[in-house]
Each structure stands twice: as C-alpha cells, then as structure tokens.
Amino acid sequence: MFVSVVIPAHNEERYLGRCLEALRAQSYPASQFEIIVVDNASTDATAEIARRFKTRIVREPHKGVARARQTGFEAARGEVIASTDADTQVPPYWLARIVGHFQANPALGGVYGPVYWYDGRPHEKIIMRYPVTWALMISNQVGRTLWVGSNFAVRRDLFWQVGGFDIERLSGEDIDLSRRLRRVARILFDPDLIVYASARRAREGYLPFLQRVVISGVRTTLLRQPPLPQPDIR
Image 1: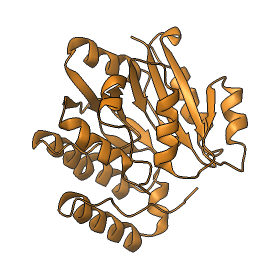
Image 2 (image 1 turned 135 degrees about the vertical axis):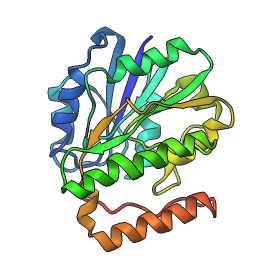
Image 3 (image 1 turned 30 degrees about the horizontal axis):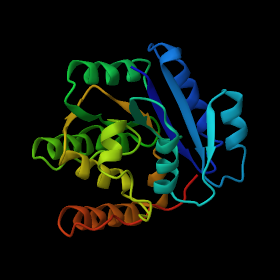
Image 4 (image 1 turned 45 degrees about the horizontal axis):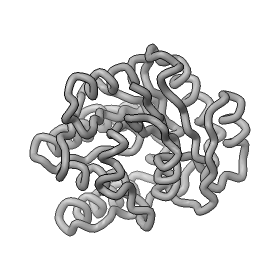
C-alpha cells in the first residue's frame, strides 16, 4: 500500500528538519511512501531544508494551512494520505501502524491518534497527554470525530468523495474534514498511534490560549462554526 505524507510548512526552518528525520526513520519500506512538503509562502529556509531531505516540494503561494493541506493532498499519489505538521515528530512505527489498520479493514475510511507535546512545561504535557487525548477518543466514540492535522490518515478516494478541505477556512480544516468523512465511512481512533509536537502554541499566553480553546470548542461543537484562527507563532 503506497502512502503519501503531506506536511504544510510556512516558515518552519526551526522544526522541519527533525520532522523529516523522523519520517526517514520509518520501519515502513521507503519505496512504499512519499513525503510531500508544501512550501506555503515561506520566506526562510523551509524549502532548502526540504530539498536537503530529497522530499517532494509543492508550492502554495496563498498563505493558509487549509490551502496548503489541500495543495499537498492534490499532489499525493498514495492510496492512503497521512497528514502531519512540520513541528511534529512521528515514531518509527507510525506509517506501518497506519497501513496495518487500513489493510485489516477495507471499509475503514480514516484513522487518527493522540498528539503529545515533546517540549513545554510538565503540566502542559499532562494536559495534552490526558484531557486532550480523552476528548479526541470520546469524540470518536460518540460519533462526532475530531482529529487534528498533525496525526491522521485517510483513504484518498474518500477524501475526494467528501470534497477535500474547505480552503476558505482560516483554521479547523482538519476538524471539518473529519466530520464530513465520518458521515460516509468508519473512522478509528488508535490510542497507540502517538505523535509528538511542539508546545509552541502555548507561547501565545495562557489566557489567550485558553480563551481561544474554549471559544473554538463552543463554535465547533454547538454552533457548527469554524474555530478561531491560530496565531502565527514560530
């Protein structure tokens, strides 16, 4: 099963190298997957780093994570498309575990797992490891799947069946896709499909961070509106 891994990247020179190193260390055969870095209007060395790792580079000149993900998914050649972020490091078994789920269940439309923080303060790591992970798991159990862009995979044909990403969204394109996909196929939450991301989002400050999380939660779960956009933090 050939897999495409899509990574949107806007000015990610600080993180992208470690992300690509982790993907190059996969136990899944290198001939059976491709890595696509979407250079999303970067003005730093993002593209240069991607070239150094001999990844496919596609360019999306219009800044926006939804547009960048869509451009990467359009370029993908895999039967399965896996999504992660430039500030994220995946374990060596990540792709093999994803493929194992799809091979075991031909009716499976998508799979996702937890996102832990590899940096940040101890209590921040605890929040991501437990309450946030529980929320992701429960959302799947109650039929309102919520996944995040740094750790999910989907069958390409179903991605196109539901219309791909909504490129007009400033954020929440990943959650929106998971909800639409849930209507046409089964989605699995795998608690052991763990990736490790940076805690840089906490740098916007606790009060603004918590306010954005709470407001976005209300907007997405009750009002069926997109979440608030995330700040551009490097």
